[in-house]
Image (cartoon, rainbow, N blue to C red; front, side, top):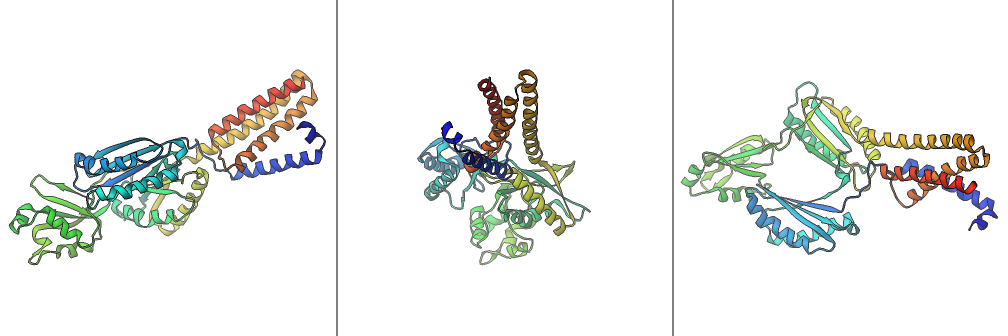
Length: 401
């Protein structure tokens, strides 16, 4: 092998130059993240069952879903968490399964399990991994106090989130904090009983209007059942006039008003309550690319919504850029100090020239190989390269001496 390349210097120089150029391209273009996606493929199924207790959710939703997922291939572990109104099933697969294949298999399993689920239960599938950590956390707050937290939350859910998700480099956006507007229907059990009605019958009538399933209901201390629905303020009067029976309107047996959903999250940004946007990358995406795209779009949003303040309260970008900078500085220092030590202690110019050429050549050659095989740069890769370069110099000195 050595003789083959030794007697073909032009081919050797061409290969070195080619790997060097590809390595520079790879160093610039490769995805850069803090850690590799080393977690096993994990899929989470979340189901909202309004009115169900934790025990009912476990028996009627979690159990059928777990049974179907357990039949899939390469399943490592299936577990569930059940609370009032919600079922959360987590499925962990072996590495060779792959995240996309795991999500497709779980979706197929849910198609089979749906026949055994309660009416209205609609499971949602989420993939989980290192990519779900927020790349950027953006805080939304009103500049002059004209907008309430409910207004900001609606703006974030209805306009800002869909706009950001339309950008290909952004994988997902989670919104939390503030208040979500909703229609609250407080059913008076005494009035309903007077007309021969109960909670179940009223809920069926409302659902028959093609309205979304209720987000949940709460039984108050006086026996009132309060249902919470998505909707607009204009829908309140329409619901009040809804005929539960030919002679009974909903307003006759219930108080229908415009309010808020039960609050499950809050957020403080820079000491003030606000709305948070957690911007996530897609599996295999680059943190720096997502951060760059998100900050570019924030400038557009600032111009579009002048009364809203957009502030970045947390980011992975700074840490990753620091890691990249430290890597290049470590490479520079390794070359300089290695040359000085070889020249001072060995007095061998051949060793100095060999080390001075081999370190950058091997570094960019390694970048080229990683780039061509679709890899990424992260702390683990950087550490491995630094250690390998140290061993390279040691071996070169031994061979030369």
